Image (cartoon, rainbow, N blue to C red; front, side, top):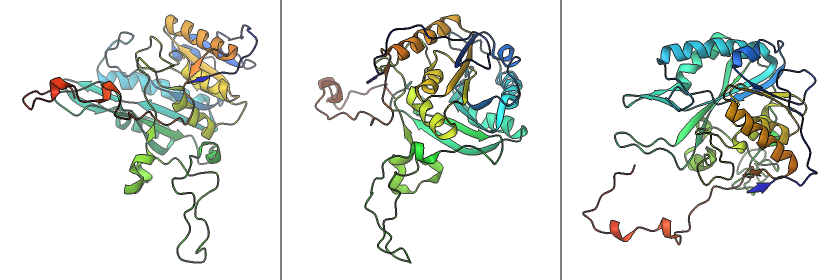
Length: 324
């Protein structure tokens, strides 16, 4: 895990309402109320994971049509506050009802398209652990819809390149025959739709989700990791620009923003999460916040760990497991 640099203890200034001169804004209340105070074309990147309407403790379950209708109204306002060269990264999973899966990214697509936005990537974020299922395959991925407001958008590829698997690979024919074919800064971390078969394992955004043993874990039941947001921020914004999370939760997006010298803005209706977000931001600036380092490989068991070995109780051929 990564500990932030040790800095003198001090109280950071977090504005409770939109302030054009603030560095960090965290509003406790409804996102639509907050957006009413934000001027047009203020924000460079909107990155969030909206409430999934899955009946969590902090959600009131409604019919999916009503849920999407309410979300469409909010997204219209988000589009208004987004700069012309800005992006929206909308991270969603699936809505499940009576055992049937409704892929939320598909439902959301038309909402963004009606606003004239362009989908640049549908990024698959996979993780190795999650809820098990008994009558369908266990879900191990979520998606990020990356939309831009115009064709003239910020994209800093060099800031997010990943190491090449074969840096010494050379062109084998044509005018560049014998010359190195890769980029010394690394390769593009492509989404799953841009890959060839042998790159399948490398092309996913393979970040562990935030479960009980993750260093960033808080009480939030659907917390995503800081490094997931970092790649979006580095690629789609420049230093000093506003990053906005309309469903800020415990402040993950805000932490990722300030970590990379961006201005951070968030709204969150749950007072408990706002308090935790404030504490996490304070811990970041005081050098005590635990963050999983960007780019660290996902742990792979060696097989020597006891939990990675087949238990004696399972060695009987007659024994089966209900786990998915």
